[in-house]
Image (cartoon, rainbow, N blue to C red; front, side, top):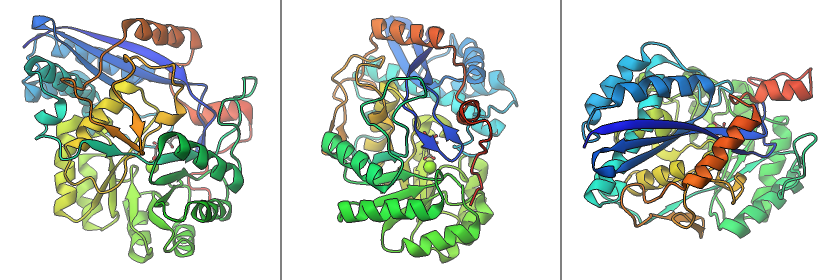
Length: 420
Ligand code: GKR
Ligand code: MG
């Protein structure tokens, strides 16, 4: 089934003022929506990053895959690789680790691979999970993803979550998120305040939710000695500590003494990191992410490696819409080795903003049920796509740069990586 035409549509949606180690989220999150218009009238859907440099790569790849068969994923990957060349796309926030040409090719390919799998599934009448070996679970558990945050973007209206700048604010946010979505695990995005304050927030969460697994992710804002100190203080409290410090060597040094497993979506983020990361035993948990690991099939290969080498598996997230959530759910449902509840930024998105027809994906008891329809199980809402594209055109933002935005608001601000 040949690809007749590819459409790449940049979209924007409102994003709250979420704080992290390198600044603050800008008022809009940007994404790209990929439509593969195939023979037989089937349309395959994909979603990925919306930064302008990434959009240019998607456009180049779109031309290269036109005319190819959605079942020939190897040839499509080769075509994407040729179109992308040896350049490396680097996101401006750096929170998914370094950039490389292999990671760039895999990131661009991922958007097309997911869309091809959606088209394949729609054409044979089976969910994508079936194309990945079949679901081993029909509900995918997610964690509550807490952020320190401002009540509003400067000059904007207060959002429904309000401010969270201390342990009480974080516990309030967690309660609200858990009441609404039923999450059974909690992650706090750290690297914002000095580690002692973030330890206090974790202790407050432990007191408020004695039975829930907790995680802390400072995005490599700490030195090795600070990481070891925090790890010792939170012994028996965290199920894992995520990216306390930078690089495979630093993480390995912390891992040798930390009482809990270390997780990463920063130091092992491309194929070339797997051998050194595993050899140096730098990580106990990999947060995989199909958006940069080369799509759903390559992510399954990475998960098999993790299983072989005794490394746990969780899933990383960035601000995303429903096509990405559907892909995450299909992949997680078909991944035997998934050992932890997955991350998602979903609660931070307004319910009235998306590009898919509502109803196919719903959270209950902290999990999303595998959609029943063919392919990804979601349908594109063309009016909603046009609305979010209009917002993209009007908002003027063309990439995500948390540091530049923070520096516009607070000129002396410096990222905290590594800050403490
Ligand atoms: O959204 O600010 C954020 C996160 O910090 C994100 O960009 C990270 O990539 O969620 C991610 C993480 O777990 O490091
Ligand atoms: Mg992380």
